[in-house]
Image 1 (cartoon, one colour):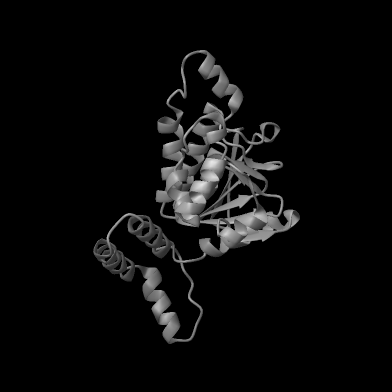
Image 2 (cartoon, rainbow, N blue to C red; image 1 turned 30 degrees about the horizontal axis):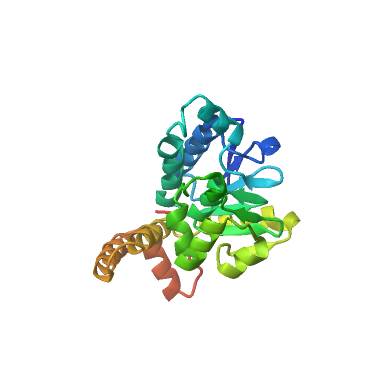
Length: 260
């Protein structure tokens, strides 16, 4: 998968979009490789957290416009890429039972920004920039950005960002809560990896339950959210991680989680 790099270390799967010469814009091949890498990470028992980033100076500039223009000229339109590629990628990120950290090293535009929004936590370089330029080329938002963005910043801010398409620098993204922290560019890799390793050493089952509860609660009633929380709590209470952590607490010891 030359367009997407995949490695595992310390129970963290690092997935790197690797088209630096094209600002990591996504061709059909790159999207297929990205989905394969994320699916592999999701299914691998040895992986307990995922780190998503881009190589070079960009995180991901979204759809490769050269390929897109060729599809338009050939009368293929979007070539069904939203349903076939982007939607499965976003669902894999949001639904996998492991935390996903985005290390936003530079420009994150369009679907590329949406990939970062779909992650559970985002750490940004001071050089990062977010842009939602769908409207400027006559398109509606995709890759879940209409759902994720307003949950990060609220409906009014999401409307402004999507309708006007004005880019946000890292400082403004931090102010709005789009990213968790901003670090100097040369510290991003270490900071994001430190966070991912911390999550990989945590209670994986509890993190999966937390993701599921948050996604469900975003579009459910309080009663439904309470019911699911109770079910998830029952399931977590049966894990070795919870039992061992409870024993450690009583013994005034630091718990060691094994993801079981």
